[in-house]
Length: 91
Image 1: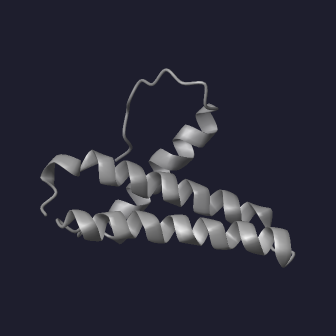
Image 2: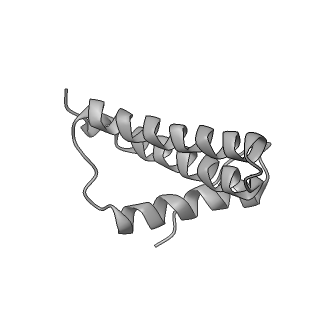
């Protein structure tokens, strides 16, 4: 089931849709989102680390720039999932 929202943004619609699609894919693949806020934050940080690695590989190791885009979408989706369920987090 896709999220249906109305958003006023300067972001291109395809980017927003990519993030929303990734959120749904991640919820199917990883349905058991942790309740602990530290663990949730660590997941977001891990995704950001993968983005940084992909950027480094694209710049220094002749990696694929598209991989950085994919990791950026996954990072954004994970951060949005963190925010979406923020009120249910435990310490």
